[in-house]
Length: 567
Ligand code: GLY
Image (tube, rainbow, N blue to C red; front, side):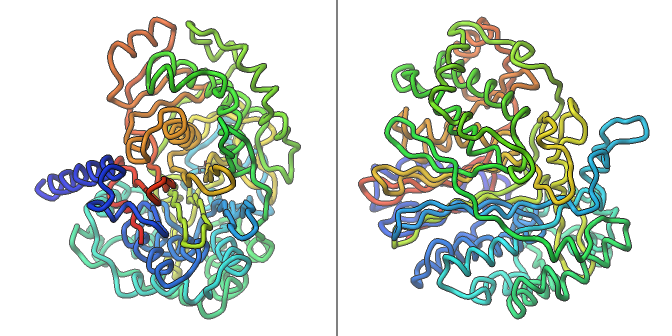
């Protein structure tokens, strides 16, 4: 109880510090700096990344270091057994590029593999079985990023993570609680119990030292033998043997064939700012740009932040975008996706004309569907800017909280359950309530559609904002609101982060609000036909923004343990 009280006090001090940072730069140095900054969900990861920057490393060096540390310190989302996306701004060439290290379906995956004997989608199979695991991409993605854009070696980038895994970390209340809640799932896998619980099966409590010797071994293997160890060496052997033992699909051929892909970012403009984000197989970039295009001709700044009119048009833009998401989006290597059409200003004009200014459009009139669930505390985002003007926006995931809850025996590596991001059956929602079409049906070696939206915003050719969030289907709308809050409503990055958020995803046809929006506004929205629900918090952004006073950053107060720090 006491601990929770102190965590809350600390949280409010942080919020206050962040809110007032722009006015009091000398006092609040930790989140304001002239040179470089890291913003991540976990303080030890932020500190490790910042140390790399202090020693002269660049943003990619720091991003890879942060990613490896998160695999140790934030196991519910940080990973080497999952995948993700990295958006990189290279100051020297004024160029933005992206690395797609999303997981892939194994070669033997089939379209109907998650249907039960009655032909219904079986979420136990797609979320909590060895079949739920996609071929991981994180190690290949990080190794590629370092080799192509970094200045430090893989060994150097892995050093802090190896030390934390082998020497142990102090278990905090959040980690201990989430492990306790997830224990019934972990109990299905002996290798997971060995990693996350004491030898007698008891929970680790806050304050205990928690060591991960098997994960330390895996990280050391990668440091010594490179990414080959994961995809064809000793780690690969252990993953494949575990899959064989439990009827999983991933083979040595699957691991050997895995390659990250360099993709051109999705690009758009919004009120004079340039938006760069992740293209398919993420839906994030396409729909951020699409929604911003729709919103650009509405005077949101004049209408005010979270006024009824502003929320109404945001909601209608979200509804239209998510309807398109369900139909068009998938892996571009398998499906033709009309990206340029979806992000064109002309298409946005057409969509904007469909918005009735004082009446919600029922989702059934936009396109039929059905959905049940929302997000869980999965995925994690981090942002980095270095002293040379480079930036990295990285979101990676093992899908749901602690992924499949399956550790590959002897590796300490928690495996993803990303296969649930495919469409198991048309009209059957996935864990995030998202619907999809043939574009996202399961095929061998295909990448499952994602909502991850690592984004970099430029102003006059220089980095202005680096942002992104976890939160499943809410990632895109959450990132959208950070961009709108700073551009339309002139908020500093802390206010933009802390402000109450909204979310609509076409189906279920409900407008989800965080607490803190005025009752007058809610009454008006209901009058205009919105099905308003006050639900749990949305997202956990980690953002850095350039101001005339230098870099400012904010870690979202919605989840504990995050840290933004600069130098
Ligand atoms: N696993 C959630 C996403 O990629 O959108």
